[in-house]
Image (cartoon, rainbow, N blue to C red; front, top):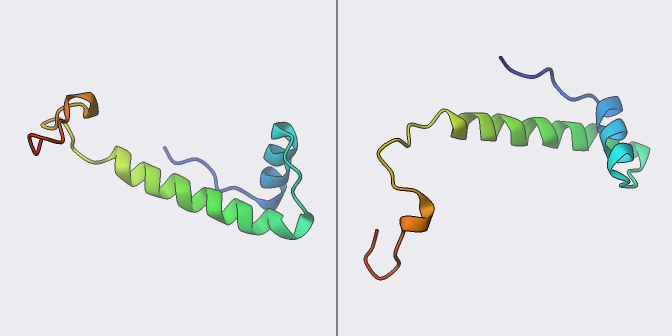
Length: 64
């Protein structure tokens, strides 16, 4: 189930909780950026990676 979209108010509240100063004119762009990042992460989570070894098993000298 997708999360509800971020609003300028939710971006401001998150920044305040994190102790990050965020000017009012940045609330809407930060909310839109957060939504975009979460959409990309959601698509990455949908990828079928079952046949890939975990990253620690990668060896640069072997090509895999």
